[in-house]
Image (cartoon, rainbow, N blue to C red; front, side, top):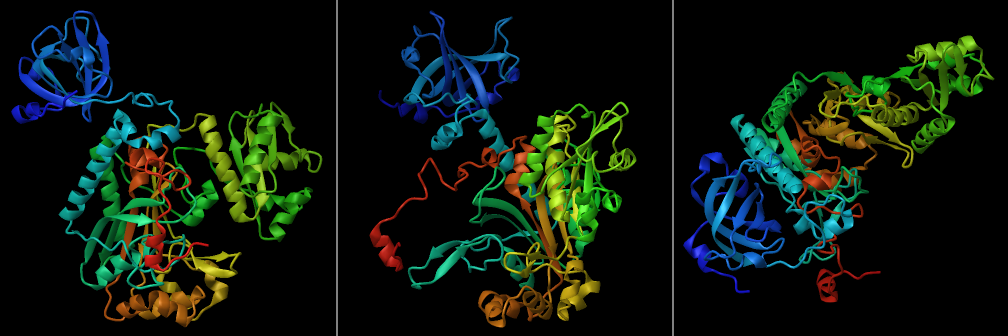
Length: 594
């Protein structure tokens, strides 16, 4: 079939399909889009035409002039239609779509592009993820993905407008940069000009935005592309976007205030949702109460510390805990007193998957306690554990006795699972939280050295500077960072810190992390030198753009808010990337594959 070029010369699209409404009835309009469905009713043919705004029902009479192609239309054909908008007949209104009260009576219809039968129906949600990713350009035609990408655009524009109004300047930073492996693995790019040397794709523009502060830019932002070669999850991709913000002459309170206002603005403008004042908790408090530094506050279940009850209780597993510096925590599962052994075994498996050696449970039905610890402790002791964990008749309490981190992780996983299973979470709510006062360092048992919990450019509390400078290693566990995370519904959506702005403090931090003088100079020499030329106090934050959109769009997979995502194995099924390259290309780069 010949593609008609005259139609596009004669007529231009006058409106989008989804914008046709009753106030345009009687007007002649031109639409262009894809055939979503076709229904032949004998004398008339009804075609739903779709574009990114929605769809409209078009009525075609194949016997009318210019309608000779009507019977040849098929799903996913690209067509142009000129017609008059009319109200649908009484009883034919479709309340499920926004254009359901009107229809377009076609005067002229042209096929702009034919289509072979697609491998799946665009509206079919049950198609395998592999097939959808292979034909991602077809999945992008779905209303769900188009709505998500439009929301992404709206958020980006809102952020740009909001920050620009507050005197921030958008600055682009390099994609080809220096490898400074501190955290995830870098993606490396070989240099043809500098044989044997490599660029790295930035994991974040961290040092670059700090250099902008040294350069006097004062208030910077960027919707930055970042790259991390790490194992993937549903909320991670090898390349991602972050809303990057840095400010000079500020303290932590300034950063929290500006970003809290930004969160309020985004949720109000995009969803019409009132965030309100965002509460704050210290890292220690959220770990004690929820076992996680990104708790879902929609879930009312809380952990209770019962370590002190283990002493001399008669149950060796619990008695040994306090002596080895571990902890006992419990979680009350309301109205779960009738849980079966198989259900409890399933929770035990969850705890073990998080590193715990096992799970202790106590059930109370009526006046009778049931527990595997009943053969070791008195009923009074069992009751004390049960009550201290918040248990009442008809409830079940689960406990873990292990190292603090393992205990928290195990019960946090059970808390998350049972919050869903018990229907305790209102999925229409958004619960925000600022988590502050993180530890500055943590000990890596694999490398046997201290590492930065956030990154090595984070400032400690002012009163603790001497610990860094004087290398008081015994005090390292007590070092607190001027760091902060914004959490929403169990996801960390933004994280940042006040930065180190004095070069001698930054050098002390690198010393603390076990970097030799030679390593420091090689990896960060340019940055240390820059700090010595007059650096303003500064701090910043980075929002995970994709995670943010995931929450706003009500999905639980980042791939749903990215136009062309990768699989869990960091592959693009559509383009078949990564792929091999010609031997000549490798020779140019001085690379030989082993």
